[in-house]
Image (cartoon, rainbow, N blue to C red; front, top):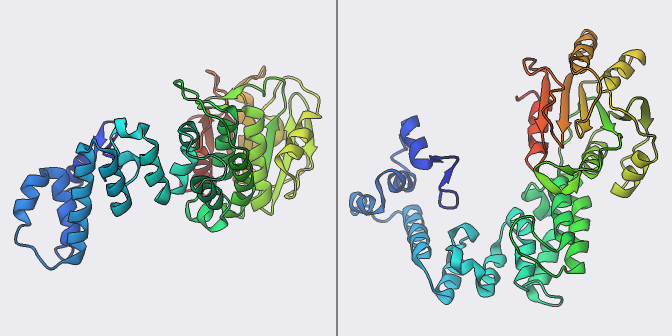
Length: 372
């Protein structure tokens, strides 16, 4: 509630009013938070003036006071104390104070994993992660801790994006640059492989089809630090390392089975894809292959940049024919999108992903499991 006050024009105040929330009287701390959000802190304090001897309520009051003080704070030393005493995060710190190295020294102590990974460039820019420093040691220990990666639900794709961005030594927007630390770079690479253990298997039968046409080296829309080819290889690795029943095929105007093992690393997968001849992309080929070979799959996932020279209806029609054999679902990840629609938008068994970012793997999992 205090980190993210609104999203896309919606606030907590809007949500509470629309859902007509009625908090349990036995939990005054929840009621307090709701009232602060809807009626303001001044009025809430008047209403709760007589409430005493509730430790949970006092914790909430103390924290909300700290957040309010942080919003008004302009002093680095006071801000540091508030961060360390109340576990405040980057979102609680006024923008001007985020230029301070000392403030980031306080933030890094208890920084959540996702936030730390996203801010490695910023902290390197402030020379906080210099070799031999406490902050460098702490960052490496957290990145290479399997339990912290699991608890933070860090997906391998998130780490691959972070690694590629960190290697570039500059941000995509603005003028921020940094001198990369090879120890941090190595820790990110280690974290990438460690994080595969965090992905829960679905038990489904997968056909993974990767486009090997010549245009797959373009940047991913939404994640320009990584190419479509690298992103596809990473996602194939995720399935190969977590699922028992999968098959990988590469296609352009022809289809070739790919021997991708769970023991393969990213470079192996990329080499196997790069060794194949290129041509024009026909997205119906994976389903045609399954029918011709009498193979039963639950899920087809196509990784492509979206360039095709075949009729756009072919893929949908071919899947419908295959669905007469098995109720398969189709996901087409169009990582470098154009205005071309490959799937049928009216078919609930087909999913088109436009572009690709660190939220896409979760969306894929929800669709695979039938939750959407």
